[in-house]
Length: 82
Image 1 (cartoon, rainbow, N blue to C red):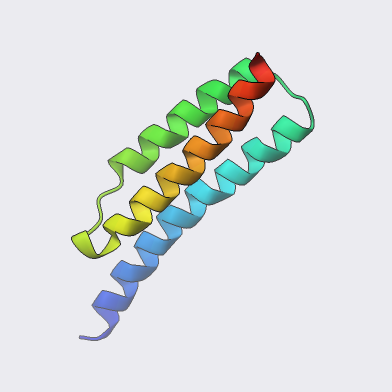
Image 2 (image 1 turned 90 degrees about the horizontal axis):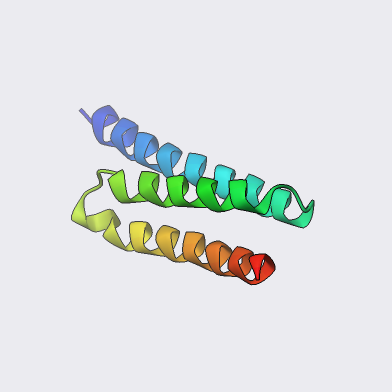
């Protein structure tokens, strides 16, 4: 019985970790000066993935923090595009 909540929590953490991993790869690509327009599109897709995450109210704060981190990277990329 205790295993089910643990597995559910693990799956949620894994979803967050996957998005953060992709965000980190985008940041690395920014520093490598790869195609900035492509990276902007990837960030939009990443933000959409974050918006579509289904989590309990308990994890709402985590969603907002994740989206703030994505937005911070978007802003840094926007400065580079100007």
